[in-house]
Each structure stands twice: as structure tokens, then as C-alpha cells.
Length: 317
Image 1 (cartoon, rainbow, N blue to C red):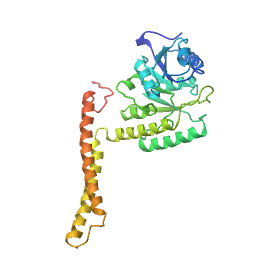
Image 2 (image 1 turned 180 degrees about the vertical axis):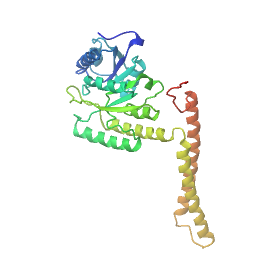
Image 3 (image 1 turned 120 degrees about the horizontal axis):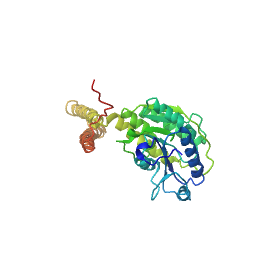
Image 4 (image 1 turned 90 degrees about the vertical axis):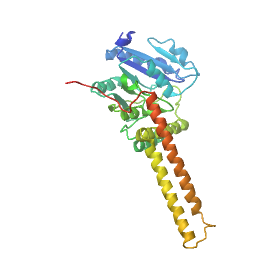
């Protein structure tokens, strides 16, 4: 048995969020345990019960070795992953879904890529076994992600991933951000790779994916786009937009003034003066919003004692 209780000797932490998966947890644990033994590295298995309403937690309590984190209610997959990351002690953290669609036998592929020098390795379900509607949603989301985030990952929705532990030293997760962890880490300079992995049909239980999660994922994607582009300089976005609108509105008002004073035109039934004033007011508001955002961002980095950059290493020759 390769499991070791001493924290400094654990090489692999397997983190799995589960929600209403009573038909899968026993077999999933057995497969993970068997594969970890084959890998010949010390390990720990962490299940996070995300407020299951069935017998999932009860069945997990009978499994060993297992570290079980139980939420008081359903907080979502991102929160479950975050709880697992905070508890994990392994040098490499491997994540996967709890529905048996990810194959624990692929963990070796991820570790091999990590050993090549990558910090993050994401699984790519190149032959997915999902319903047509889920595939359509996923492909649409992937297209938007490539446009907004440009992370070069084919399948960000695949939960089968491996991370070096230091990836989570300064990473905050919220919403549905677990899909975009590789993108967030790549933004901070971590090396990200991708490997093809197996994908199986769901046998027990029902999928938790729906249009609400898709919408939340899109909102989080826009948040990441903003953070990637303007986290250190929000004034460039809001201030520039505000200046453009103000100049455009000022131009419209100046031309209306010329028409009224010098050309004698009537402005009573024309909408352009209203548009000009609106552009100026919105432009001023955007510029002020940019200034406030700039102050908030600087205070955020100051509170976190973060300089806005990451140093990989310092060497003295």
C-alpha cells in the first residue's frame, strides 16, 4: 500500500468533487486506489461531498483510505475543488469528476507530462461520450473561450487535470472558475500542456450540467477576459472608452452649436443634441469608473502583498 500519512512524503493528491453519485463512488474509489498503487508513489485520495441529497456521503464514509470533506449544502463544483486544493498535501494534485466518465487509468499520462517540466496538464476528451446537446453547448463555449481567453486548450471542461502544488499558492476561485484554472495559471506564467484522455458514458446517476451552469460559465469567462487584459490597468479600458464617447458627444454638440448659431437651423425636433449630451455624460461616468477601478485594483494587490508579477527563480552565478 502506497498511501502515507506524513504530509511531506505525499507525492500525489487525487481531488474529486462529488454530488449525488451514490452509484459511482465505491467503484471510482477502487479504480483510483488501484491506479495509484500501480504508479508506485505515495498518495492520498480526497472526496468532497458537495451537499449530496442521496446516500453518497454515507457510502464514502465506508471507503478507505479516503479523506472526506462534507459541505453543509451544495456550493458548486468550483467551491468543492477549492476545498480539496486547500486540504491537499501532495506535490502534484490530480482532479477528476465523480461520475466515472473520467478514467483514473489516465493519471499516468498526466504525471508523465508534469515530469517533462510542465506545471499544469489538462485532459482533452477528444472522443467524448456525451449527449448531442451537451456537445453543442461545449463547442460553443470552447469557441467563445478561444476568442476571449486564447488559452490554446481544446477542452477546458474536462475535469481530469494535474497541477503542481505551487499553482495554488495565490489562486482564488469563485463562480464556475474551475473550468478556466489552466487559463488563469497561464496568465501568471505557469507552463500548461494538454494530453488526450479517455472518456466514458455515464452509467449511474444523471448529469449536473444545464443551461444555468453554461450561463454562469460565460459570465466567468468575461471576467477572466477582463482580468487577463486589464487587471493591472482598468483605466485603459474605461478611461479610453469614456474619452472616445466624450469626444464624440462633444463633436456632436459643437456641430449642433454651429448649425444653430451660424446656419440658423432649428434644433427643437432633432435628437442629436440629446445624443451628444448622453455621450458626454456616459463618457464622464466611464472615465470616473476607470479611476475608481484603478484605485480598487491597486488596493487589492497591496492587500494581497502582490506586486503584479511572479518570479520563477533567482540564481547567483
